[in-house]
Image 1 (cartoon, rainbow, N blue to C red):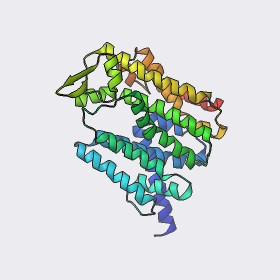
Image 2: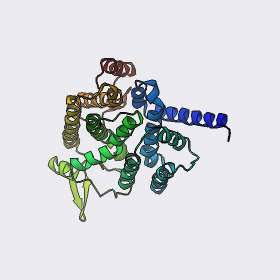
Image 3: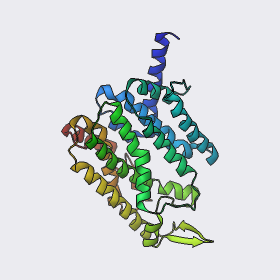
Image 4: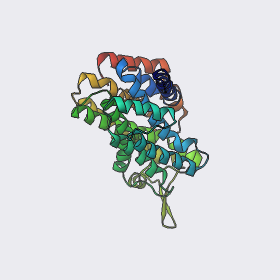
Length: 301
């Protein structure tokens, strides 16, 4: 294969990644545009990988097909790190990123393996505590930030610590926003932990199996508030850290998490309120972009 065709193939793969992120993860697309030019390609490839794995179960007509897709990505990560060619644009872009930058295999594997474990859970196999949700959020969201920092050549324990908190906050809020989808599709609320559900009168038991009530709006709002408060605490901890200047743009997803929290607060933590789905995370697109630009310009997150 000629160097020209190889170059064209890589360019096409990265273009595909950018388009996937823009189509299916628009607020993160806008966040990545604030990165320095030399970091964007790798960041879009990593974020596109997240798009592929996070949507696997949702777009599949059969749960088994979605799980097979996740298992395929688990195997593909091993192949990519073994320098094997995979005929998929996101895999090809990731392969280029990994060959050019020091990106740990452990973070990408941990991300997809957490999604596989979640996909294999039964509807009645509900998480026990908020800490279990935090662990899932770190495994699926913080790992993407860790990988992005690595691909940008940023080695900082403080930045990693902030990324951990921001990933946990973002992941928890994403799970809360997904509750209406799961309630409509499966008539269940899989991301309200047992202890939180019991505390707010949402826990039901039948035949030795537990479930979460979907008909108590007040109880659900109280449960959502409790989990959102944990997310808010993580954002506060992340902002208290003295993160190196070169890492701050990578942490801009904190802005999106804050917007989500603010919108939830405006609707009294009712995840079924239609205002949550308006614009970008519940606010007009221009207003979101201005918030993002302002934080980026000030070196905040």
